[in-house]
Image (cartoon, rainbow, N blue to C red):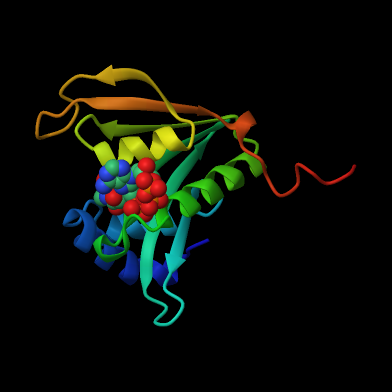
Length: 154
Ligand SMILES: CC(C)(COP(=O)(O)OP(=O)(O)OC[C@H]1O[C@@H](n2cnc3c(N)ncnc32)[C@H](O)[C@@H]1OP(=O)(O)O)[C@@H](O)C(=O)NCCC(=O)NCCS
């Protein structure tokens, strides 16, 4: 799990991926509250560079996925899939029962990723984003996610 020592690397990755979706202060907030806000990172083995992050909030029994970023130079190599699966497992271990997120209707890559992991579209928020794009509300029942403790004998 990422902590405050990763702020600088997260800000730089966010700049490369989305031109700065969150400010440095927002990243500090995300990384500084590990009980409610879960942030996982993926690092390159040779350089220790941050390649991807996945952040969500635990709100009651729900994981609200807030942001998923993968460095443009290593996309389509499974980084997001691994990060998201780990985040869903962690959320289930924290007693979450469902995961939700909003994604732009035009974001084909993200939609394909979420569909592959079992999310389904629950609804649409029309013209939700500043550029006029609709948001599609995605939902996953976490009972289909296996955690490390699921197979342990009692
Ligand atoms: C969406 C994003 C996180 C995907 O990361 P990634 O590491 O490339 O994803 P993965 O390699 O794990 O891809 C898993 C599956 O998702 C789908 N997918 C991913 N990128 C895709 C693309 N560009 N076009 C179509 N399908 C895509 C595919 O089904 C893929 O499996 P495959 O490669 O075996 O066909 C990445 O493109 C990104 O950072 N985009 C910019 C930020 C963003 O839009 N974030 C999501 C909204 S918060």
